[in-house]
Image (cartoon, rainbow, N blue to C red; front, side, top):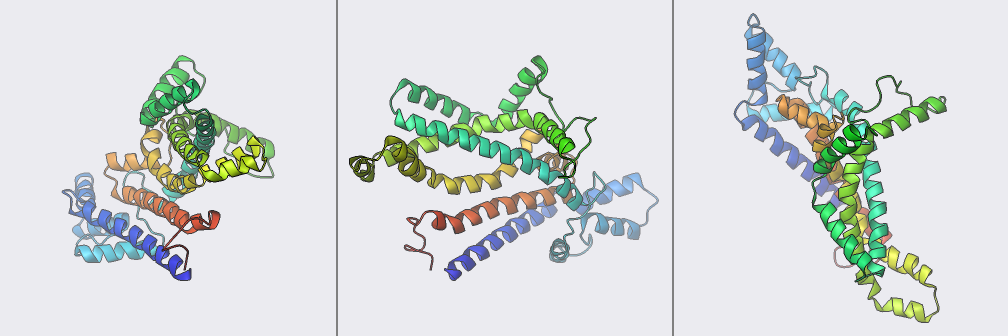
Length: 342
């Protein structure tokens, strides 16, 4: 069992390092690599700077040695990462770690709410659809779920902004919270904290709605398929012969066994939710990590791009890692490496 955990941990670390390494070298081998682009910008804006000053600024800004070979730049970059140094944003002029630490909680706030809401709605409707298999309710909701799941969430976002934001003026169309609101989170100021959280939720409502509408359709279809499969199992007939109520059968036998396979998908989706926030946050002008990823791309802000990309990579790998290690604990039937964790 310890060997299994060690292997999975090693695989996760290797995956993160491999993706980070690939991204590092691809960015620097592309035409107009980060150091050259920033050097050209410095020369254009500050023609009086000496070559030594330019090299020093490039090194401080990008956390690389501009004239060193690529492998030395990589070693220097990794050494900085191990010290928590992601470099300095070219566009924002502040350390990338500060931008991420300030933006990440907002993305976690919106994406976690959207993911949990879509999961709850999806598995609820999916279970009902399975019990009513072949009915008008099942057929209609199946078509609706397929339709919702096939629409890009940013399309739903644009439509919700136009209709609920501009036409009906029910929700704000951008920002994290109202400009007149004082950001307050603390147990000593419960009223101010609740007011701030309510305002933040109001501003994030359309973003959460856009993600939920699309994701709920996928969860509903998965839950429906799992539930139909469970409903055909022999042990359900035995449970009915034992005189168990349909409610107990639905919750303890059908619901539990149908939702267990979705556990892994949910944890993986938590990681991918950060990546899914990229376009949505840009649509809603919501400054989370996804928003800054697009900002970095548009401004050729390579330190910011690399920092956000690294966070997203770690989130995805961590989700898969936790799912892999814990699924066997919640479902003893799961077989890993020939039947158990050795």
